[in-house]
Image (tube, rainbow over all chains, first blue to last red; front, side):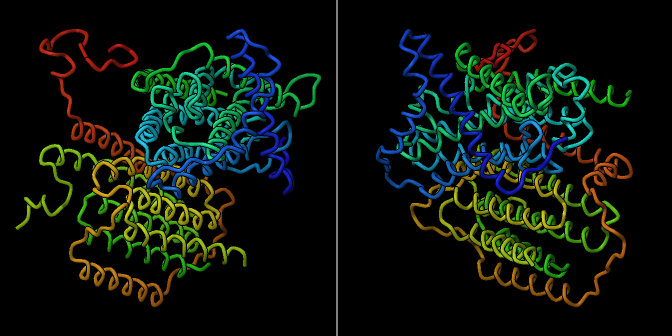
Length: 308
Length: 101
Length: 187
């Protein structure tokens, strides 16, 4: 069962998330350097060096920038990425085991939908706006299949509480009998953190998109928020579909970490292998293929739950 | 935290929304006023559920209907605005008074 | 006592940001002031032990305000608020009507003897709501579903500027459309 941590769990949460995000960023840099044939040693510390460089870099200001909305958006993205993992259990401990944990996660990642647009709007730049609107269009595509995938997991467990979802997987993991929901969930984690094939909102063809005019601390906050959002989404896949902390030999929290890192490694590998998809192509696939598939999956799960 | 306080909040939100819906010229700003009024219904419905009839789920259903209503009225409102704008290149209600009188 | 303070902050914040919607010059800020008003109102709902409805209001309002900001920037002439402007008609009349309505409602609130319920509050209001919607209030659920579907169809019909000829060209009875805007499935 999942125990709730005392108040200091809330302080531990961003530290654990940052450590996971840092490891994933290092893995991404190592993959990139291996693909380009450079030395791997420098790539492992690249995230830390980049963060340090951005901290000392001077902030760039544009004319008539909407500072309140721009910086507010970046801060909201960072806070939402951390708060989304409030309900994710690490083995047996969660910071806050809310009774509506799945809806809470959904609400926090919807904040990203508004936050990226705000960041693009704040700099009073055409490229920023282009990136922001691209992310809104992407959100229209991934949001509904994502919600149906979450509903399918809640349906399988009969509860919105993450602890109940973990307990319902004691015999067989959800990924075994709801694979479509798992794949759709992973796709929407990629899309919600505009990662991999869905990184057109910060694409190079729009001079960096929503992050076009960010520099210094603003850029660090935005980049860190993007990594944390990816990490939070991948970490939430573990209690939802991969059985939480269950597994032989190792303690539960170590299994949770191992599974989270495995999902993150998979997502980073997907980015390296698949080129960027245009949003209108993903829109059509999401609305015409993914939504009916997730609905059929939900029907199958509902029938199984009723027949049990 | 009494019923009167919650209803006062709902009444205040409703009045601010009513002012917006009556005074604004642009269609989208009128819709912001309508959203505020639906927000008042949400707060009022939740307060009535908690204080007057918590055993029945009717208050929660009212809140759910109000949230759906907000989404629906926004969607249709923006579609109508888009259609009018494409036809006549206007976005204020004063220029769309064909049915008046 | 803490709930009273939180309720006071949320209520004051909700009304203040609601007023700010019509006072700020920047349309983007007006939309997000409206979002802040909704978030404060959702805070007051969370205080009533309605966890699911509170988080649901937060979720839906963020999504709706993002859609609204797209249209606000499209149609309003002062999206960034760089010049001051007022676009109102009949402002004094509207203020009078709104003030009168608030006074009348406040009088009703304090004069009407509201019913109180002695029954115990359910421990899990989410489950009660779910069982009601799937049981005794199934008609509400079905009507909401139909209403949403009708809205989707009506919205697309009203707002789209492309028709059959854009998708098929001149051969309307062709099996596969010849759409210049290619989608992901090459339809």
